[in-house]
Length: 303
Image 1: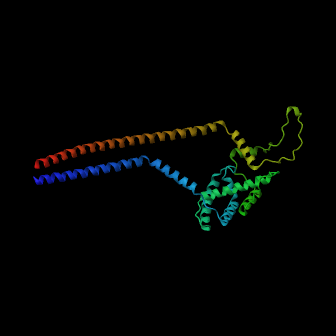
Image 2: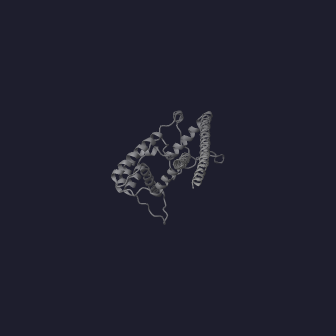
Image 3: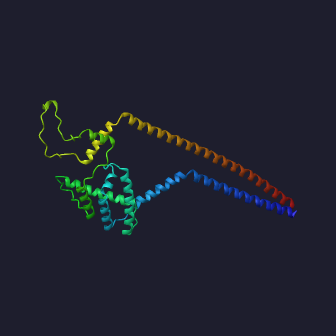
């Protein structure tokens, strides 16, 4: 009788250990499933926190030698920076050269100062310097200065950049085939500042305006040439572009729908597996209750 009681007690302990291990494994599997299902959300949250941290802790103050190196490198590679911007044409080769140059500048500046600099911080500093230089040049070109406005004073690196911009005329990027054909057919005359005679003027020529510039700025002339070239392009070419974009959007939408179907199927499989383990736990719980009653009845009969 004592041996049977000990055997029943050992079986009860083993059942409780199995139930506990199954319960722990079920919880672990459920947590893993939630982690996998929210993987993209967690990645977005981490990226958002990283960007927020970068905004909260901007780059420290740049030293004078760092600013001088930035200004000197910018002036030596002015055409690269110019052609990589919107007004310069957003040239792909220039953008690639600018990225490599920013990486090189960040590495060199990190050795000059006491703080590690990133290419993004260097690019932002260049933008800040250019913003102040442009304000100075805009105020300088004005004929009258407001009395309540303070005079803008540039530092030596900013003065270096301003002198480079004032004395440098950047050649435009190699024109497209349509622009080359237009230039070969005839000379394009800038008529932005020519007074067009009307019916009431009897073809009279207006007197010259001495206060106006003799020609448009380079970026305005380039914009006009781009508009003219776009007008000369055939209509079917624009239709081909729009059709290509539409097909690309359709293909992307189809891929997204397939991903959503796969995610739904995976969710259903995980839900079915969870229901299976819940039913398994219920069965084991009933078995545990049965053996507990058997042990209690055995102990009662013994006493």
